[in-house]
Image 1 (cartoon, rainbow, N blue to C red):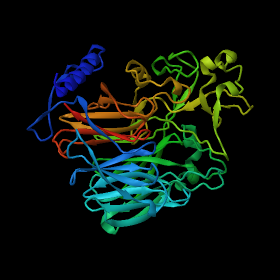
Image 2 (image 1 turned 45 degrees about the horizontal axis):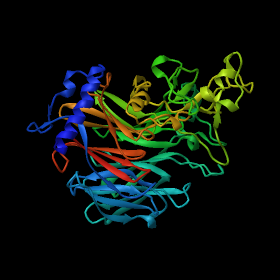
Image 3 (image 1 turned 45 degrees about the vertical axis):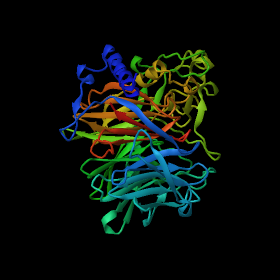
Length: 509
């Protein structure tokens, strides 16, 4: 059988199987007109090609330049550099050369491309010092600008109109927790000589109590409110007027008005109830296998990657609810349930729960749960939500959560790593939205399942699962390349995996 036909058959088989589970409607198998109205393009994806650029620390984040058909890939394997890959033929992506960025500071964390410009987020040699965003030409890699931003710039992106570059500066503490930089967001004005305005969250100190009551976490050792906030990832509205920033450790997202360059609000995300059937989890890696059940535990959403899609003038913000803890020599919040004291009124079956085969192995935070301050735990809060969620970007109201679907589907696909059950399950890492034909598709990358789940979110209130794509080890970054910008006239999905350094390219059938 021809390889192309084989791939197509495999992709359609996935769709038909999903249809039998009432996960998608009949339109899920139809070919759709592409954006240019001339060609037809299915929204079933197959692997086209891949390229291996290194080992652990390579291929974390990628960015594509449609002007040169170059893919720029973060590579911190044995030094900090940007690897350049020729993507003219997606079935055979070819490594070209590397851009050495070691002279600019420490590790390279993120890259983004727009209008022939490549921007790179680079932390300082001492990560608690201010980092840089360095801008190059995508043609010859000439440096255009080097801009000082906040400490530990973790993610960088252009606004869709290309007028601004935004950097999420996480501001993590040092390992001793004696230095804790302020978490910030930098807005760089491309047309004004790359001038920069760096925003912090100190203006929300007066709202700290009410925000914490809604689920915001502010708990760092001897940290001010502004020091404790740690921006992680940024998404920008299609009209380039608003941005949303994930505050992962703080269990919140923040809305930013780009025109006024102000942080408008912080939106706490609350907690997920694992005692509900739709939210079942496997909380143990020592229970003899994968066993889902309901448990008296809450999950903190703690999103990493986020993306936004407007529908009927409502910004729907999608979050990959990975979860993360603060675990340093000078301060750690991590505990296992077997090692803590449970309140016997709240947990009359404490002995049963604390067995390793039940909840005993599950990692939780020691900063929440002692409601009455008597030294034992009345509630239990674990890291992440093992799901993706959709939120109203103005109000913070949850529109949708995928419940236990990702973990259970990972099991069915042979992708679930039971060794991670006591931590964060499949560990949704990042999300991206792209338009294929007349459909909006959501791609959810899962770090521990080594896979991407594809959903139809044309109606973002009712996502429809479509497909499971297996990729490299620990996918960290996903980018969608539209048919209009693709070198082959078909939509592409590029998945960068940090544990094995493999960049995988998927294309529509």
